[in-house]
Image (cartoon, rainbow, N blue to C red; front, side, top):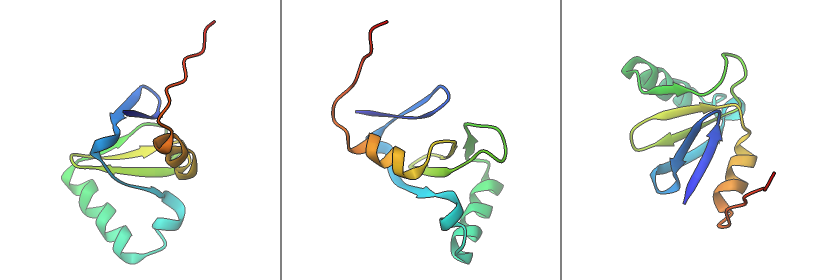
Length: 87
């Protein structure tokens, strides 16, 4: 199954290590240090405009900054049904 992270980004759910709320996760110094190291490595993929990030999704290869809340992403990731809307 796949998870839509925002914009045009869809990833395989099997690749996800963790989905975290950006605001609360960055309260911890260890998380800030981790994000700094990831940024220096160049593996952060922003999906939205700067300042609109609400969560981050860590995968085996990258860290995605998403405009979608971690709660919504978690709900989507736990949903095993694909919904297709007809126009």
